Length: 397
Image (cartoon, rainbow, N blue to C red):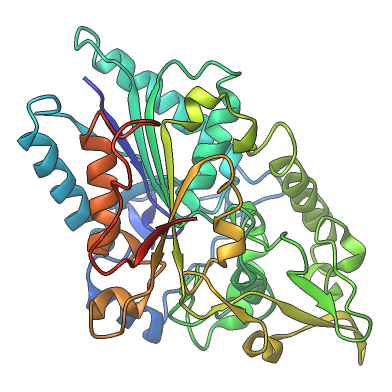
C-alpha cells in the first residue's frame, strides 16, 4: 500500500475557535465558486493576532485549531485521482488523507505536526504493508513539505513519490502587498477583505506563514533611484511603519524568517539524494501575467523604504498569476519540473479566474498528478514525455 497525503495551500484550511460551544469559525475555507468570489468582495474578517510566541493567539479565550479543507479548489481533483487509482489493480483502495493546518503559523511548525500525522497514520495502518507515502501539495503546502523533509534527517525511506503544484519556493510580491496594503485582490495568495485593510494588515503582520511567502529571489524589490536590491532578511530595508508599533514581535518574526530559509528550516531540494529527486515532480504555471517586482522609495515624507504599489504594473512577468515563474521553477535543473501554460480565458473559465488558486482544477494538472502516481514506469529511463498534451501547452522546463 502507498497511501497519499494531500497538503493544501494557504487559506484552504478553515480555522475554528475550539474554546466555544459550537467551534466558531475564525476563517472559513472557500467551498464553492460563489463563496470564493463573494467572500473576497464582501469581506472575510479575521482578527486573531498571534502572540510573540506564534504558537498561541493573543486573545486569552481563543484556542484556534484546523477544521475542514476547502472543497471548491480540490474536491473534484482528489475524487478523480481516487477513481483513477481504483481502476488500477496495483493501487485499488489506496487511501488519500487530507492534512489541513493552521496556515498563519510558520511552515516549520506545520511540518512538525505533519511529522506527527505521518507517524499517526503509520500506527493506524499497521499490518497494511505500507511501502511508502505519496505526497501531493498545492502552493504553501509545498513549503510545509520542504520543512518536513528537513525533519527526516536524511532518512527518506518512507517516501514513495512527491508531486508539488504551484510551489512559492522563493515567495511572491503579493505577500508584501498584504503587509503594506492589506488587500491583494481576488487573484492573490490571500484574498483579504476590501474595506478592512488597516485591521487586516496589522493582523497578518503577526503571522509567520505570511512572512515565509515574501519574495526573496533576485531583484524582487529594488530601489527606484539606484536599482539596488533590498534584503528582506534585514530590518533596515523594511518599510518602517510596518514594524514601528510591533518592533519586538517584528524582530522575532524576522528571526523566524531567517531560520525558515536557513539549513534547519526549508530543505534545499537540490541537496536531496538523486534517488529521492527521481521520485519527485514539480508542476508550475506559466504565461499568466504575474506581478514579479516592486519598486521602493528610500524615503518619502516620514516613511523609510516606502513600497510603491503602483509599480507592480511595471514589474509583470510569467507565472501562475500569483507565484512568479522564477520563484516556482528554481529546482528545474535538479528535479523534473513541468510548466503548464495559462489557457485562453474561455478554455476553462473557472480556472482562469484564479490560475494559481484553482491550479488543481486544471485538467492538464490533474492528468500529470494521476499519471505520475498511477504509473510505476514513470521514472528516469521509463516512459518518455509522459506529460505531453496534444496542444503542447505543457513542457519540461
